[in-house]
Image 1: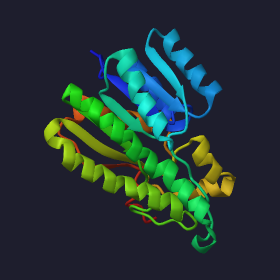
Image 2 (image 1 turned 30 degrees about the vertical axis):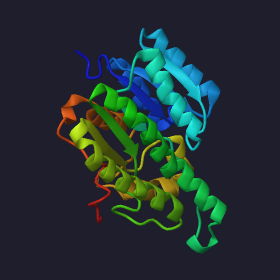
Image 3 (image 1 turned 90 degrees about the horizontal axis):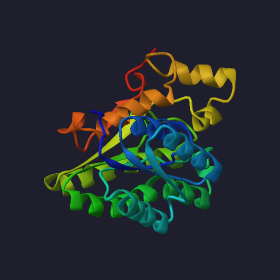
Image 4 (image 1 turned 180 degrees about the horizontal axis):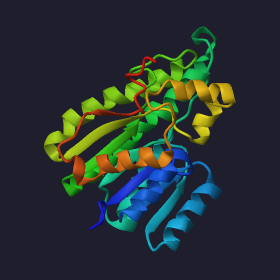
Length: 254
């Protein structure tokens, strides 16, 4: 049996990168999916691909920082597929970057809205739906930046992603007795459109790779398999954790 047979999952930020790879993997593992992203053509292409492989998916075009989007995603999961078992709150942005004193209040606020407030809104509606099932797995995409490494010019990004770890821990403690597991995944440098916007020259790419003990970046598929672990029964005694999938960036000193 596939790892997610019979499970219903929401994935945000599904139109590219880690979200895209995870959507494809979850579909192969038997999940029925509600996929959320802002880019309609890319999202609809993904849903069509999944359906062509005899799997089940529906698209929701929206902004994860909008409470209506979070509510609608859960309603779609319940109305189309009968409930909700898994939520991967993955959508995020690098936000405004630069020396911290130069970051605008608007840039700071927008970054926190996309990376942190959206996760709160997702959980606000996802967890009640999972309580009906008596179980569930909620996951957030954080990062090693601001957790095991401080990288210059990334204050808003690091702060918002670090906030997800605190949210993870509180939710895990709040709902563990109800069968809800909550975890954060902390990828290292990953070869995604967002990652390439930072590693945008040969020199920058070499620097990012050098941060890792493995001396390379991850592929989105590698990160997706760790998300599958947290979503599935393979991690049935794992909750409240910050799972580093960082190629050794957290321990590398050479």
